[in-house]
Length: 231
Image (cartoon, rainbow, N blue to C red; front, side):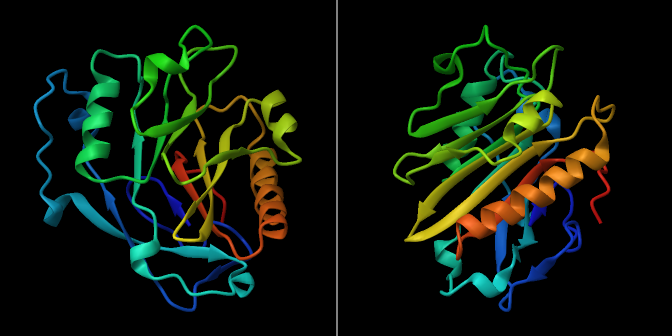
């Protein structure tokens, strides 16, 4: 499925089939200013208004050989941070992940570069995976996965092609309740310096490859697409 922070389009990816059973995943949605408060005051979360129900979409659902109960689905947090290097940004993120009992957090526009060490943005209890933008400021994506979910980074056949063409797409895999998940986070900037069609082709190739190599896994694709047309 895909999450852009505001809505879900079940037809965002071609050859995409809905699950026979439709699940719903609670996703916290908040204004960007909420994340940028410089104060470390506790986040007030009215779940009636701050949670939207995002339908789970699975690619190649016929490969799923087991049913997944809602309690086994990961708790996902997605935010466009516009810099994790700002004062208290990581502390505020840590507060939210802890308060909401998040399994995996996808961050776009991290604004991290090689001068920023992993330890400077580490969060206790979570493994960090990051892909920084190279050659110009801003951008970048990262993923925090709760310790104990056995997360690893995935490099597809198109990974090097993506690096050369400045794609900001990161894939990781993790396991929860004996179910394997493939999780991708994408940042597509408003003024991309690559051919959009090449990114879309890369997405299709990556997903087909991952489905083939990891049958029975569930795939999530989240991030900030900035109206990327992948219908």
